Image 1: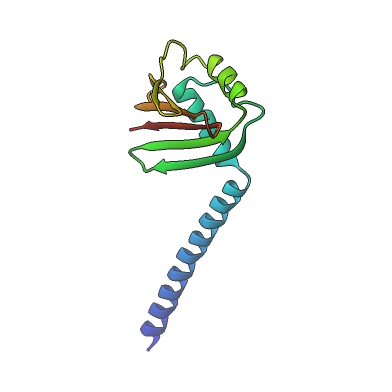
Image 2: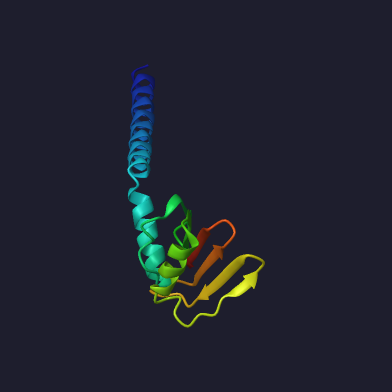
Amino acid sequence: MRNKTRKSCLIIGGVGAVVSVAILLCAITLFTDLCGVNDKSAIETAREWAGLAPLPATASNLYVETTGNMFTHGFDITFTAPIKDIDKWLASSPGIANVEPTREGNIRIYKIKPRSGAAFAEVKVDESKEQVSIRTYWS
């Protein structure tokens, strides 16, 4: 009878410890997401990988998505800004220098030579929506 009670206590204690660690990890992840810590880091890394200048001061509707696992990591970033500010931003971005964009309708596509070990870097500018999409990944 004592062994069953002891086993039950060990099992309950172990499950409690696992649940506590899971709750703690979720809380840390939620806190860093709410504070924008991950977004800032993702933007900086994407800028480094693509050789991009800081985002225009007028950038709004910022959306940052981080993808990947232990073998790959990627960032998809979109924002809107007046087209004149987007063009100034592109002109001040060394990764865009000497890159001739291709066109798909109102969308300019800049295939950028990735930097810092990244495998892919691309910027799309939708002129009609005044929207920029940045996509980078490392693999």
